[in-house]
Image (tube, rainbow, N blue to C red; front, side, top):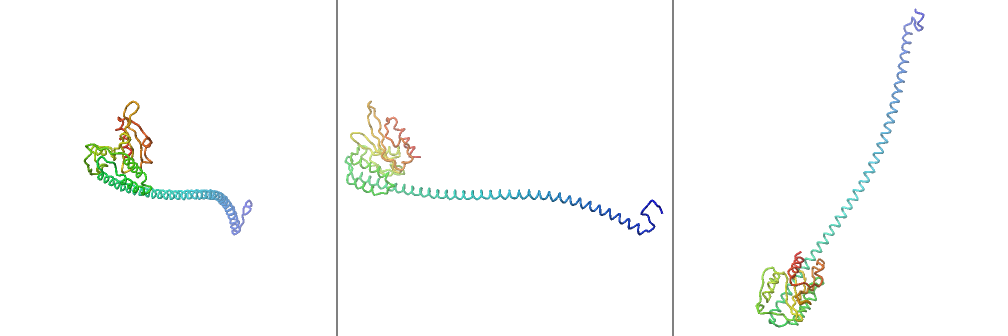
Length: 288
């Protein structure tokens, strides 16, 4: 036996126990080290996971808040869109109603104009060429006009003005006006009969009804646009230089009350050379 080896013994079982004890001790120490390493790694992972979880919670809360905000904005936009649609539909219905009323008024005005035109033609047929209009027939026509609705007042007032002036003045009919001309078609002159070739031609040119009148030794014509009720007078006057000019006075704007330019509402004086320009401008307003 070697005396330098303290654990050396002749008993093999004892040697095995000592060896097992050493192995177990190393195993225990190694296990503790591994467990310590695992514990430290787990703590690091737990800290990281906790941070990640907190960050995820914050992001989730932020996204929820943004989602709620966007949802609220979407709801507001939907309500605003619904309100706009409702308002638009109400305006559409309102404008359609106004359009229908205007069409009905125009139809009634057209019928009334045709009726008055027929009455006027009948009065022309019953009156001699150089006599005045029958006063009683004119007054009865005026009474019938005054019972119309307020929508027809613009055209009725213009017709009353024409009849009033016709009551006071004599129709001048030269030799070319002794034969009646019955028009046909859709023109202004085509809806009635006139006694004068030149009057018939002028009505075709200007697209309006023209009635010549004498007034205090002055030559005057009354012009009437039947479909709108717009009417005016043109009087021949002489200025201080002896030059002939035309005096424009509006009698009724009819349905052009809101859209007529300012010059149509005023009293104008212009030279005869500007007559074509005047009727051209009037024609633009009527056709627009």
